Length: 170
Image (cartoon, rainbow, N blue to C red; front, side):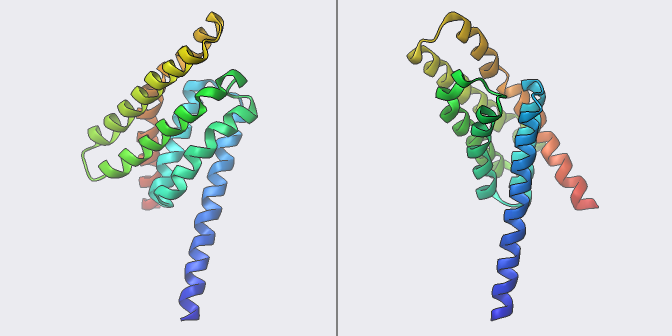
């Protein structure tokens, strides 16, 4: 019995360490200050990769922590702080829907989670902007970030799937 408990604890430790390393990769990418399109694709890929290898709970944890890392690293401007909850929800919905659709065709796995994430972040992010009523300059800085979500999610899911399938084959 004790041996089984040790195996379970060892497995949890490995999963937690893997998730921690993936969080560090997300933070490093954000700190590298790459364009939002590139960072967004790879962060979404990490969410899917972690979902496949460590499970939904760990991936959702990264979905929660990632946007705060973006603010702290300077990748996301401080005026974006009010829309961080919207980004978190959009990321979590992406992972949740991917998880629910992973038995479906590639088209469904790529498009539906990406589209729903884009609609959530676009619509609710825009509402947040309107409620906060920042300056016109801030609006023009925020709108592209809200608008690229679909275009970062689709390739992100695809890269996450390819990476996981390559590692399984190795």
